[in-house]
Length: 386
Image (cartoon, rainbow, N blue to C red; front, side, top):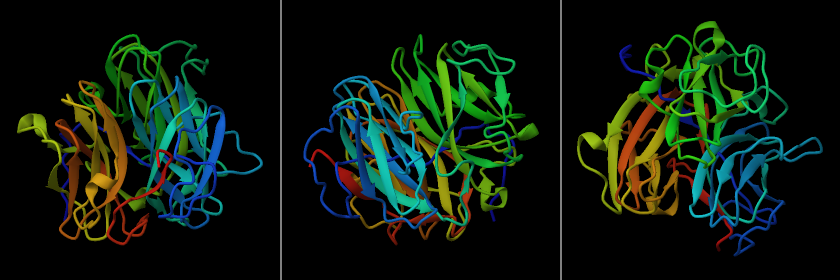
C-alpha cells in the first residue's frame, strides 16, 4: 500500500514522441534508409499498436542540418503536421523527446522541417479504451506566448509571471493530461515547470531545462489542480508553447503525492554520479501491474551520451534504446512511462558519466499502459543512420 506525502513539490512527467523513414517499417524490421531525411519531409512507420491507441514513442533527432523540428502525428486527410511540434533541434547535438501519438490503424508519420537523422523507440501505448482524445487524433495548441490570449498579451513569459488555465478547456480537476511543452527564444539558461494550481513552490522543480537561444521540448503528464487548471513557471524570460494530446480518467492514475506533485526517487548529486556504462535500479511505490510515469534528467554530464530508463524485469540490452540524449555540460530532461518490474523497481543506464535525477509524477493502473514487449522493454523501430 503506497503512502502519499504532502511535503513534496511538483515535477511532471513524460509520454512518448516518434520518428521516421521513407516507407512503412514493420516492428523489429530494418530501416529502409541509411542516411539523413531531407528537409520538408514526411516519413511513416507501423507502430504495432491497435486502432485508437495512444503510442508512446521516444524520438531522437541526430546530426541536424539546421534549426528545425519534428512532428509525429496520425496520418489522414485532415492532418496538419506543420501546426505543432514534437522535437525541436539545432546543429551540434542529438535531441530526444517522448510524446503520445494517437493512431487510427497503427501507422505514425513524422514531418521534419530540416535535414536530420531520425531514431524512434516504441515503448508501448495507452490502451484504446483508456485514452481520452481532446480532438480526433491530433494535438491542439492551447497556449503560445507568441500570440495574445484572454487576460494576456503576446510576449515572452516572465520569471515572476503566473498564468493558469484549463489545458483543453474541458479538462476536469485532478485530470492526468498528456502535453508537450516547448521553450523558444530563451534569453538566458534556465528551466520551466508546469504545476497544478494550488501547489506550493513552483520554482522548486523543472520539467524542461533550456539554454539561451535554443528551442527545446518535453512531453510530460501534468495533473490539473484547483479549478481544473495547471500553471506555468519559468526561471528565465522565454516563449512558452503548450500542445495538448489527450488524457486518461483520474481513477486510472495515482499521483505520487496527494496534492498532484511529483516524488523525487533518485538524485545522484546526493551520492555519486553514474559512470559510463553503469546501471542502477531504484524502488518505486508501484503496485503489481502498474507503470511508472516519470521525468528523467541528466545533469552536469562529463561527455555526450544518453540515458535509458526501463523495467527491472526487462531482458533487452539497455544500451539498445534511449530516453534522454545529453551533451557535455548541459542539463537535459525527458519524460517517459516505464512498467514497474516484478519487484516494483525501475532501472537507469547511462552511456557516459553524468548525474541523474528521477521524478515520479504518478502511477498508471494496470491495463492502461500496454508495453510493446512482454518484458516491458522498448524496441527501436527506426534508425535512419542504418
